[in-house]
Image: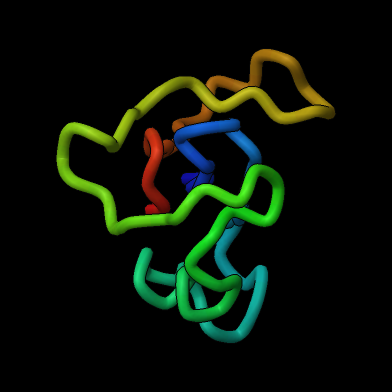
Length: 81
């Protein structure tokens, strides 16, 4: 199941985890991702915060290759997840 971390302000994709085995560390936690990329969005510069349950969204995943793949996507609003 794909997991996508987005900036809640500009919706810039901060990190995409598309499949198991993508890297040797697995899916990073929100705090690990903030430590890796910094505490500001690289696109708009807004400060990233840890998400709350209200910021997590489950939606159909649409990859660039297949417009309606039917997979699940996790997103956050203005915070990194």
